[in-house]
Amino acid sequence: ARWNKEVYTRVECIIEQTKDFALARACSVNLINEPHCGVCFSTKAEGAKLSYCDLCLCSWKCESTECVRLVEKRHTKKVCNQHIFSHKVSNYLNDFRGRQNNMGHLFVPETTLNQPRKKFPLDWDEYFDWRGPSRSLREKNPVLWAAATVELSQVLTLLNSLYLLGLQKPGRLNSNETLVVHIIESGPREYVAGQQWEEVLHILPHLQNIYVQFITNMDSAYNSPLAPFETCPNCARGNRTRHYGIFKGKYHEYRKTSKDYRKPDIVLAFEVGIHETKESWIQDLELIKSMKVPFCLSWYSVYDYQMDGFCLLMSGLKYLVNPTLNPFRSLHDMIDMNPDMESDKCCELFYSIQKYFAIMQG
Image (cartoon, rainbow, N blue to C red; front, side, top):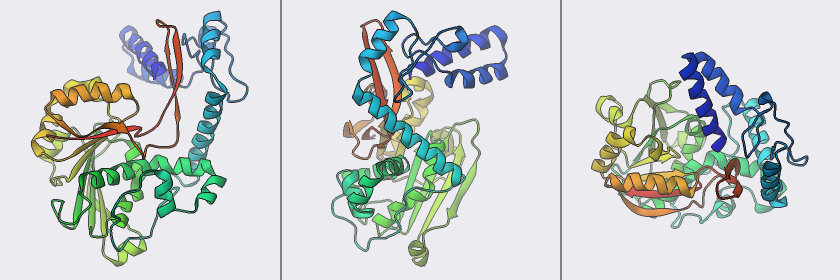
């Protein structure tokens, strides 16, 4: 988002002037949550007089005639309603995770299949008709089911990719009974999905185990060896297991140094922004290319997949599935302010997790 980039610029100035990283960190938190004009980025702390839409409590603007004109131009009734629904979903998720202490899940199917489905569902409606409650029940509480897709989106994107590549069939993986998944540059959102990765076992009955290895470079992360986690009663009776592990570092470092390394059947990267730090990706992309395994990526926007796609193609990877709208993108549309003052176009955009995806291979 443009505001985040503005925050980074201001924080860099603080670091350059004061050399105080603690101060810069505190200022960044305050700035990100500070109400600001959606066009010129002026804040109340800077003396700007701000106002917003009374219905959705969004679309902040200052008193500048130009800013008012641009904000009112883009804030249509449709956009306003989208803001309201987005807030409802966000509040629902925050309340739910608060009650569950970040451990619960909104929707975790526990029924297992005896035979794999020949064709994977085409979209969320078809998936929920198959695995969840009736459509009439979903229509009574659309906020809950939009929130449920936030965690399920990653798992369904993986399953849809396996079906597109024909890897859901017995005998197509490195092991007939085990699926090994590597998620690189992972973060809290991937960890939160937790138990929902077990849905892979439920839908692919020939699998006995799933190993999900998170590779992360986050400062707050820690190394955690692959370990089994509790499964649902149906899987437990069949001695089916799910294992998770966390490696702190880059992917090529994990390959060289980790005792937990297993050759993956598929590598995933969710909204990682390769083009923003492309130098740090050189060795990782070389490794992925040499392994000749499917590499599934997702992005927030067309711009992101165009920029990342250029870097990926230059590294020698090729598309197995071209970038396209993901049928299992999150149904929680989030707000992204992206004004373009030079061309006099001002758009209020909404983005969603896993909105676009593609599959590549070396």
